[in-house]
Image (cartoon, rainbow, N blue to C red; front, side):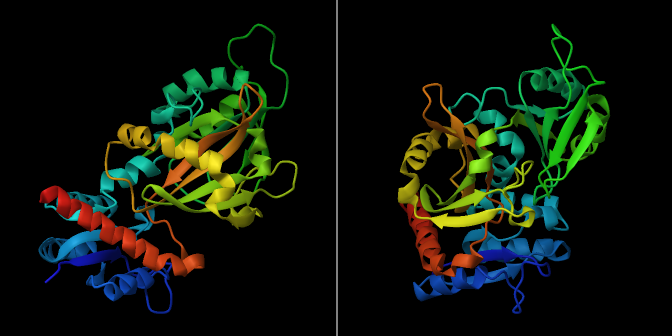
Length: 348
């Protein structure tokens, strides 16, 4: 008898339907069952950690994580359990360290020696690092600061100089007036640079705290391009155009961005370039198996020769949903089965 594919969920939350599941979970479960692979949902509960671990270890060939770790009570214990299951031979979709490796904002810094990410992209884990580098970077161009936590644009700031700096300086003085636009709703605040940087301490302190700093790309106004990936295959492309307001740069629906769904063939140049570097991305982010379902977001830029270039702005693989396209479930099930068969062939 075949072992099961187990989908991890957590009870409660705004992402659940009337049956208590994420809307895209049961379509995957049922698609696997239809294809002859037993599958079920297990709700993670830190109070039942040992029981869940032993059940999955004994009964699963693979797990698929459908939990957003940032909203989970017992996140550290959940990741430890997933890590132990992978060590026991259960196929992780994804491995917990791939989940953090691809999803953390500082993944971009690890890719600065590829053509996907600008070389002047930095990660700040301490306030001293922040105060040393950021005023130098801001002197050269507008910046975007991204916190490692949160969603819907919270803690993502476009930072511009609001007054001229003295000639000949090597960094922006901390007393300089700056204009800061937050991606949550594109609202604008004016600060002195030093005071704003102290305000940003909240993003750096605590477990997993950090800020990523990269150049602002003005062509974000033309839209962000999200590749929806099944392992190494782009399934669709979401074109997310910010609102028309002059200061708007956020590509979230909440901020008024407009979404359009395109077939991959319309973005062939971007996709071919990304896929050609996928092996390098995988290698630099820990060399784990590519996530089952993940996304990569790009922003248009200008190449030195004047042609279009694309800059990687973010990746996510923690719990990417496809509730608006549930017809993808059989294709996801085929990919899960392919993962299992590949692992079986390696063991043979």
